Amino acid sequence: MTFIKTYNIIDLFAGAGGLSLGFRQTGRMNIVAAAEINPNARKTYKRNFHVKQLYTDVCAIDYAELKASVGQIDMVIGGPPCQGFSNANRQHTNLINMNNRLVKEYVHAICTLRPTAFIMENVAALRSEAHRFLVDESDLSNERTMRLTLRDDSLDILPARAVFNGALEFMRTFDNNDSYFWVESFYKTIRALYRFRKNQDKFDASLQKHSSTLLPQLKQLGQREKTDAASELLQEKDAAFAERLLTYIAQQTDFSMMIQSMEEVLLLQHAFRKSRELAQNRIHIFDYCEEKGTIVALVKSYAVLDYIKIMLDAEPHKYTLYEHTLNALHYGAPQRRERFILVGLSHSCQAEYTPPTALYHEGFYRTVRDAIGDLQEISPSVDVDSDSIKLPPRSDVSVLAKNLRGMRLYNHVVTATGDTALTRFRALQEGQNFHDLDSSLKTTYTDTTRTQNTIYMRLRYDEPCGTVVNVRKSMWIHPTLDRAISIREAARLQTFPDSFIFEGTKDAQYQQVGNAVPPFLAKAIAHSLLDVLDQLPDE
Image (tube, rainbow, N blue to C red; front, side, top):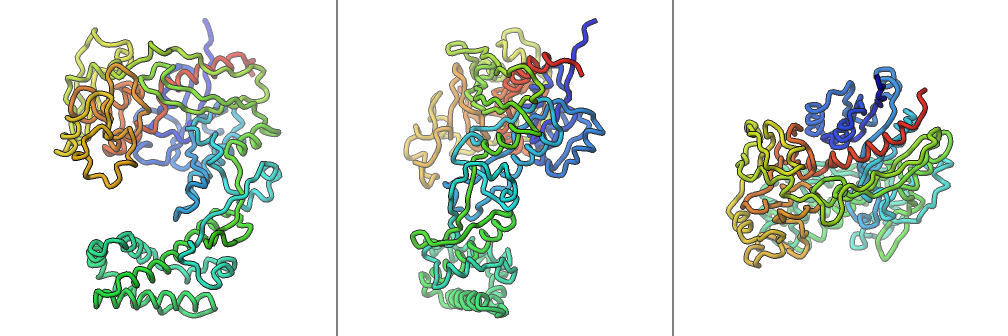
């Protein structure tokens, strides 16, 4: 009797389970634990996988306890969210994306569990020089991190139009004292009003909406206790703003002067929140300075991929790393979807890793028709809680449809189509999108030039589609029917079988499908790893 070796896997940042499903489909990968923080995706994962441990927060996992519960972990898989710091976002109100630490948490999991192999899957952001980590206080004492190539960067804190005499020194000595901050509800209200600074009618309507809570807060605004020069300065600015807004409410005059006063104090509050965000994330600020009139925080950054390499490609956590960009199209998915993968093999592995060989090539790619053609005559529901639909046996379907087709059809649900959307649907031919519409059908969009080519995309039946995203938000259209692509049709394009059931709200299900790794791609990756692991001697 031939013994077939199996391997224990943990999937971190599992989402709905596209990566897990592909690995499970090999028949030799046991998914023993997973982690997913999104409640809808976690509900989907729980329905489709029976793991011993399904964690909510990766950062709270006790890995020693996990190993005691499930035994040796042979492989860690997952795609940690990674936006990093980007210069393109240096002016945003929020400077740090909390997802940044999750890549470091993934690295921590590998260092702690010491698997034979790991695979980190993500879009090209991991590889992008533009997306970086900011140096934090812990990095300063980490000899490895400080060996990385550090780039000087700056973060906009206070715009030039809000800079006042002494502002630079003020920010240098700012200590994030709670008394300097407006209460959050008041801050959000003023931000909402400021959005209409160029439209007085909309401003007045919003002001009327918030007046009952705003008036008492305005009267208290200028009563901050003056404990030092900074608090005295802020009290004066807040009091001046409160007086101008109260006067405007009473007399409806001096709109522009009131907006100018609002802008000054609101941008200062933005600056305080940026400072607090940097402090909470322990980002090391080397100094503040003035650049073209704007107060900026001087920081340093390093590339995300460089961090991963220096932490894992060295003792005591020595892994040989392999980088590859794979396209799901080459492995049987009917869509063009590139994913970057980083594979790590323990230094004990003698074999080289080779990425999966492409199975499909130009001229033979699977198409949208291959994936969803057999569903055309089945009307979708608009109710996310609708019953599943019995699928009769059919022999006249594509090879792909045979692989995906189940006995029942779940999640064949669409968004109800309004009159405007239906008119647009009817105006578009296969392969056309929003930009092919007559200008009279674009009037609901403020700036049509900023609309992506994927919006209102009517798919071509006999070609692969583009990357499946949240097709509800993108308003993807069926190739021949004047309706949206259903959740199940999007899942088919992602190569999820009909037996895989999505949970949660309608938009949550569309989002889970769009976020997922196509299981066919995941399965190809899993087999390429099995080729390596099977060469290792049994322990």
